[in-house]
Image (tube, rainbow, N blue to C red):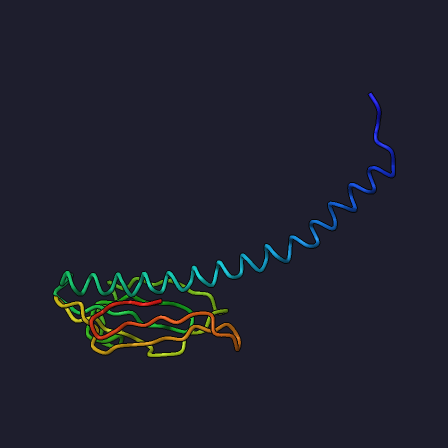
Length: 142
């Protein structure tokens, strides 16, 4: 059985270093994009849950979602300020993604329609990375 020469070992290590050097930034960028899309999907999921709870008349009350600086809050009540806080569902969100738009949306009980159509732009720094829209009938586009 023949051993490996020093040259073969060094060439193998150099090839591995080049592949790792090229692959690591690509994987890092892919993971960053995945985490931003995941955050957007969680926000949409919270909107759908609030709409469903309002439509199903859970607690015989409207439901909504409030965007806080570091979290999304699904709440029961006619506004975030007057909510029944014991029913809050809080999701801590990444500070890397900024939302510009209304700070809350309320869905009417039984109909599930929002009190107002809403639109959020999602940005990371100066770059727009997404858009979430809720129309007057509660349809969510993203």
